[in-house]
Structure formats: structure tokens, C-alpha cells
Length: 371
Ligand code: COA
Image (cartoon, rainbow, N blue to C red; front, side):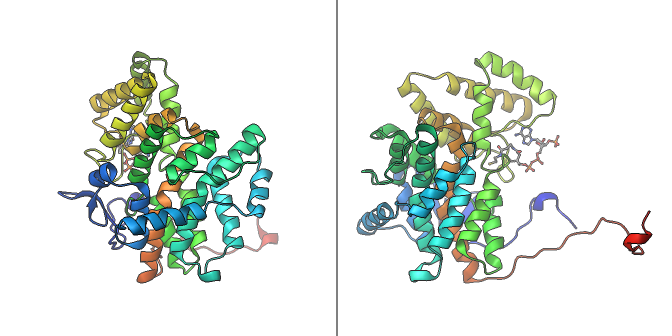
């Protein structure tokens, strides 16, 4: 029996996270997402996912120092970033940057493992994005070092060229925790499929970035911002949304393959979006978003997913819309790496079957005899 989009199909076992299981909810290695979002930091979560356990204070300090040391970009990578067209989508910047780094710092050389490649990418993605962005936007060749000791702070300070606002940095940090891992979603499954052929970690991450780019997956946070910002007011949003639903249009940032009664990450990111909007004294996108949420619940019984309020939160952090999904990549790389390591630990080639629906067997006609 075939299942469209593998809906409801269990495609393997994993010890990394639970998603949507009754009575358990979303956990990373057994820890609830609410506890992690409220009381831990992204670096603790990255360590937990990649190395399998929560770090103690000394381990966390050492890990943060390690990530800080891994931020710089090789000259060849800077040259490549400068050569990319200004119209390049930043997801393609990351995809291409990862691919080049995989040739300059290949896995297996100098003791590099999936874990250390994961650390390197997690640490340097912010540098890649900001280097490319500042070169294209302001014709600047920036230093990719910063005084910030967190992944969130480093990204924000490099992007803006100014010291980081602690409210925005902490808000971004919490969203990175929320985005870090989510079981067998499309990009993670892509990474596992690539890994299952005994390919290298960079290839798995390049494939995962490609899968995350689409608006049905990670690209939804960018698409949600386009939706929210297209309305002048909550009233305008409500009126237009009714028309969109009548036309059977997809409303980006709503719906989920697994969560049918609400995404546990959504209330946390909604709260962040609200606080950032209030601090900025600009609640218009937040109010429009709330109205969209109300209409979607009333008309379709649908809940927002993480991407919906992440859009307003990132906008209020001053992050350009095209960088929303790349920020998701920064967060999710540690989750992908955890799955690469797990897949390798008990590998079996992932190779399903399909039900054939093409033509019946027929006689081959040589080129000169075809009409
Ligand atoms: N807006 C409007 N209607 C939606 C919808 C949305 N965002 N998401 C699902 N639906 C509708 C579908 O059109 C379908 O209606 P139908 O039964 O009348 O045909 C029904 O709800 C079931 O949806 P389905 O496409 O079968 O769900 P799925 O599990 O295959 O898809 C998503 C899940 C996430 C791909 C889908 O909800 C979606 O496209 N959401 C928008 C993109 C998004 O936010 N992605 C990020 C996910 S974290």
C-alpha cells in the first residue's frame, strides 16, 4: 500500500527527539522543549544534540570558546562569497558555502568527524551569511570575528555591524533552541538518506539545506512574513484571508504534518514576538498575526506552527526576511548532525519501493522507424 508523502509512515527508530507523542510532546534527548527554551541556551542544546548529553559549566565554557574559534572563513570561501550574484538567495549562499568548505576542510582529514564538521558549520554559518550580506549590500569586507560569545549574538552583531541588543540576542537564542531538532522532518530525512549511502557529512548538510529551503518546510517563516507584511491592518488581514481561503490558498505558517492540535513551540515563539514588538513600540505585525491566527482557527480549525510567529520575532530582531530560513539552518545543523551520527551508528541503506503506474510493457521502436 502506498502512502502519499509517507504520511503516517514510521521510517526508522531514533533516540534523539520525540515529536507529537501523546503525553510526551516535543523532547530533545528526553528533555522537554519548554524547559530547554526557558532555562537553557542554544550552545547547551547544540552540545546535547551533537555530543549526546547536557554539558556541565566547564564543558559549556569550553564549547563556546571552541565555537568562537571556528568562526573565521578561509580566503577561498570569502572569494567565492564575493563572486556570488547579489540576487542569490542566502539559502543558496549557505548551500554553496557548505559545499566549498567540504573541499577545503574535508571530513576525515585532520581528524575531522561529523561532530566537528557540525561545530564548524554551526559556528561559521553566521559569518558566511554576514560576510556575503555586508559585501553585497554595503560593499564592505568585514572581519568575521566578534566579541559576542554566543551563536545568536555573533550573527546579530556581524549582520548589523553594531553591538548586539541583549533583548534581541536572547530572543534569537531561544528561537534557535526551538528550531534545533524535530525528528524525521523532510530535511533531516534527506540528511539521513544521503548518510545511508555512506556519503560524507557535508553532502548530507548540503542536501538538508536544499530540502529546508522550500516553503512547505523551513521556507515557511519567510513566506509567513511576506503574508503578514502584505496587510495594512488586522481588518485588512481578516478580509483578505477569507478570500484566500475561499480560493483554497495555503496560508503559510499554518498546519503541520505531525501536530494536528497545536505546535508546542508556537506559544513560546508567540510570546517572544509579542515582547519584542512591545519593547520596540511597534505591534502592528504582531496584531495582524494574531488576527490571522484567530481567523485560521475560526475558519479552518488550524493552529500556527513555529514558523508563523518566528517571522514577526525575527523581523523585530532586525533580521532581513530572506535571512529567516538561513537562521533556521544555523539552528537545525546540530539536529542534522545528531541524525548523521545516529544513522552511521547502525546504518542500513535507505531505499524504499514505489508502486509503478506507468505504461504496460511495450515493443521498443528504433529511432529511424519512429513516426
Ligand atoms: N492553509 C490552508 N489550508 C491548509 C494549510 C494551510 N497552511 N495546511 C493544510 N491545509 C489544508 C489542506 O489544503 C488540506 O485540505 P483538503 O483536505 O481540503 O485538501 C488539509 O488542510 C490537510 O492538509 P494536508 O496538505 O494533507 O496536510 P499535510 O500534512 O500534507 O501538510 C503542511 C502539512 C505543513 C505541508 C501544510 O500544512 C502546509 O503546506 N502548510 C503551510 C506551509 C508551512 O507552514 N510549512 C511549515 C511546516 S512546519
